[in-house]
Image: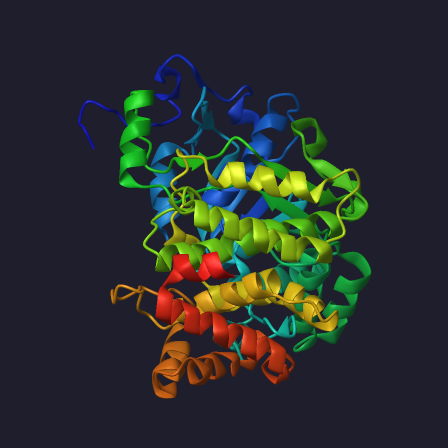
Length: 493
């Protein structure tokens, strides 16, 4: 960090360069009303900014206390800055930069589980929100049920006063609210899971019932778990990004976030006692049924993002923008969407064809350096919610699925740990070791390797490995990847 740049703090924020937006409210009067689990870049570039926009017009107590569930890194970056940080658009034209003040503090659950539970159970906390990624819910992806054998769930059942999973923390904090005679908080899941509100409600009730059936019944009667759909591309922040923000501000921000201009938040309007921020003032859509929106986003955006990440990485593309700049991969995406769209009932007034073209333009943004490797993480958790439901529907209707099968084959190829140039892949996935071991033991033939991967029932269930048409399509696609490479396989799909 250049010594000429002082650190971003509440005292120095006013020295930011002209054109950088500052909080438009008295931060000293802001009180917490939201506890957010999983204070990563996405939430700070999405949910926290919606709150920031509301605070500019409404001084109600909707400040955010963030919780890191694993490491202290985020706290250590934000705390010296008074939890201020910079949000910077990545757009070719007229990008905007702002300093954000809606986060008031950061707790680290492994260090202070009691402090986290106290914050969640506090009467002023009206909402507990989450962005912990698919793997953070300790569920069995093929069934959507709680994985009672998961190490974190077993730990939390054995140590109820010091839970470490999101599900365990929510159940314990709701238990405290019940014991204190308080109404429950609303639990707002903001992760890419189909029916995320109902799914999380089921997981929390399942967990509670393992030790206290009375608590499980109280949660079912009184708590609210609205469904949501969130959308904004937020690449990982690099050291070059930190340096660029420092040069723009004249201040060093250790925790900036970069994001595209587009954002969307669709929220089921169902909150305990009606207590919620006026998100609609910031452009959020409060609706009675989120399902059509999340269905469209998971099937069209998230599925294509994953498919492009695996094919792009295998083909040597570092970022999504690099991958879609290849006409062959862009044409593959359009054919993939043509397979997906007939299985997606569009939300009212939405054209899926126009939505797909808008996605392609967003992916092509040259200023968004969204790494294919980053999107490729945790594929064993993502495929069951992003790709496999569409595959099952096409199989039931007897429809071909060459592009979807290629996406699955590309994931299997990626999980094998070596790209098509023979370079090792740093595969980040909860099942990475087991997948690599099974693929290595299967031998070299496409049929054997595909069978080994499809044998993971937690991912594919029992139905897909038993479907001869699906197995043949994935095997043929895997063979094409091995023989001809990702680009040629995409061209042929």
